[in-house]
Each structure stands twice: as C-alpha cells, then as structure tokens.
Image (tube, rainbow, N blue to C red; front, side, top):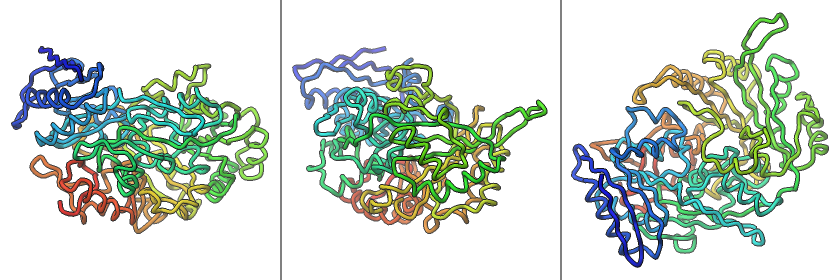
Length: 546
C-alpha cells in the first residue's frame, strides 16, 4: 500500500493508491493518479478537503461501490466494475477527473444516489472511472427568495430535512423515496405528491452548475438556454456532470393529510374504486394525489385457512386538513370507504417519514440516512403511459398475472397526472408526458437469488410477458415510458471493441419513447455541446456526427 500526499498553498490532497494492473489496457493507476494530482495542484483554489482514489485492490473498494447500489442485480461478481472510484469534495476534483479521463481515453460514470434502475450510474460494459458525488451534498435554503441550492450528491431526504428545518410552509416537488439522489432524479424529471399541483422537479429548476466536456463549470447564463433545457428532464449524464441545482421552492399549508390503507381487490367496492380512480384521479382537486399499488399477499380466510389475495394498497397526500380531505373523498372516491382513523395530519416534511415507513416516533433526522428504509433486492421494472381507462376485464387479467410470481415479489403501481401537468407544454423541458395522459404504470418484480446479469431470468421473462400483454391498452406511436424508470429492453447503444457507439437511427428507437419529439432537440444540443461524444453510456443521447 502506498500513500501519496500532495501539498501546496492551493490544495492538499491525500490519496490512497493500491497498485493493480489493468488487463488489456495501456492505462495504469499510477498514470491516472499522476494526472489527477498534477491537475488539481495547478487548478484548485484553497481547500483542505481530501478526496479518495480507490482501486479494486483497496479493501474499501467493494464497500464504497456497494454502499449506493440500490439494485442488487448489479452487485454480483459478474457485474463489470469501475477502473477506480473517485469521491470528490470539491468541484475542482471533478474537473480534474474529466480532464484526465479525456487524456487517458477512459469513460466516466457519475453516481448521485445510485437509484438508476439499470445501474448506468455505476455499471458499464467498457472501462470507466466512477465519480461518486456523496460528499458534494451541501444545501442552502433561502426562505425569503423561496429558493434553494442543492449539490448533486445530496438525497431527497436531506433536501426535505433542510427545507423543513427552515420553513413549515415551503416545499419542493419531488419523489417520496428519501434515499434517492437529487442529481439524477431531477435530471430525469422527478415525479412526486406535489406534481399535480406544481409540476415535476425539473419544472422547478431555476439554475444549475454543470461541468461540460471541456471541463468548464457553467451556470444557466454561461451554458445557454438550449443546454439548460436539455439537462432538465433529458438525462444530464449525456451532456455533462451536474454539480448543483438551484430550485424554486413552492408554498404548502402548515398541515397536510396522509393515508395508507389496504383493501382486497375481490371486494366489489374496491373494484368500483379502482374503476373510478382511472377516470377521476387526474381530474380531482390538484391538492390531492392518490397512488395505488397492486400486489399479492398472504391472508387468513373466514375458515381460518391460509390463502393468497390480491391487495390494493392506496396511499396519498392531501395538502389541507383532514376534514376537507374526507369531504373531497366522499365526493370523489366514496367506494374506498376512508374513515377519519385512516388519516393522519402532519407537516409536509413529516409526510416523507410516513411514506418511508418511519412511523414509530423517529425524528426528521431519519430522512438524512442515505440507506433505503425498504429491503434491497434484485429487481427489474418497466413503465407505460395510459391515455384512456383500461377496460375492467383487461385490468382484471393484468392483475391476475401477479399470481404467477412469488407472493408479494411483484407489483404494479399507478400514478396520476392532470392538474399542473396539463398546463405545461410537452416541449417546455425534454419530459413530454403532459396533457392527454391519465396516469402512468410502473411494473416491478424483485427476487433474492443471485443470477448472472448477462442472461434473462424467469422473473424478467415474466415481466416482459406482462409488458407485452399490455401493448394494446397503453400509449402508442411511440409507446411512451418514463426516463427515471430506465429500461434497457427498449433499446441501447452499441458496444464495439470496448467503445460505446450510438447512431441517431438506433437511438431514436428508445429516445422517442422517453422524450417523443423532444429527442430531436436533445440530439441537436448534444451535437453542439459534446460533438465528440465524451459523455456517453449505454443509453445516452448521440451527437449528429458520431
């Protein structure tokens, strides 16, 4: 083990290097390290923070790599691993990594929270350096101006905690999973309980700090409106590395009402509720968002025998008092039979404790835990958009397919659109799924056994059959999907001789499913800001000339 220390009036970097040969590569860790240390010492401003350069022989390599892997499908021995992991504390460390990666012709993957469904923030079929942004996580909230700067390595839970610490009546529209990183979540859109009221996370971005392919740190003014448009919902990893977002904070009441209840799909009233939800969830008061999850569960019948039922889990948030909420539910969804004891009033920030299963008196500090509150397993997911209600008989057949998987290991979620989403143009940002969409579907299956990621397993095969079955009943031309529920089944860039190649015609197959007509503008922006395709991955936007 060798310790390398570089000190100057501008920077002090301590790097632990474990020598290792990289098979079939002219690049050595010593060369890359020397480039980093030289570049940082020449260009960094005064900072005493260290960053780590971790190679595969380092005992902390696996711990660091696996600490933010939220899909165990990509933690198996067969999963390709990074050439090295770099954890920067300063923007200049990221700049140096970009410079040296270009110099040594090695690709970059950037990880914020590690929730990419296909692992593309920390997995690749080609040699790459992983930049883990966990230490770039500072958050500054300006209550007077109703805005916040948040660095890309922070999680949604950390952001919510900081906002809640400063104000009871400000919020940010984003997802409900507290361990998701803001860097990737916002760059892919960002859906949550406030979306029907205020739009997506990406709709509420005021500015950004981004490192481009030339290693420059750009803000909205210096990057220009085209690039600023592209990184808000178009997947920023195709264009650069987002270091921080400036967010518009939105008003919320001092009290919100939440609920989370279970029903049996075999009950007639529950079937009526699901039928009504399909037609009304996108049209009700925009202060109300109701999600539904369908899954199988073990139960005891009246005779005392164990049986398997199809559960309907309904959960939601109403931005107002429980009295007003119950009146609204009686009007719109009386079939659910919601009672006052099913509901809880709390502060907006506390609702994220509730939905992350912190329901035993935990303090808001629980939101700052970067680990998910849910059991981590291997999983695969897909998504669809629905433009007209799915017929009841088709819905029944779709849900019956859940019985084909192990109890509770597969589920189907539905999330409503409408409200503010209908008012925003589908070209305002790259995320195009606006007016005309009733809701979107999230198909999900998980498993515990270890499998080879290079070949399909029975669970993924089941999910693909379910997805194929739904083809006639969801959006068409294209069959639209949500970028933050990334799915490599719909297409990916070619890998040839250890290099990822992408063509416009090939990429448009999956690109139009994520972005519809906005894909063409994304290609135009990519061609201007990164014509040599430095920022690339298995599903990145291609430039015109590559």
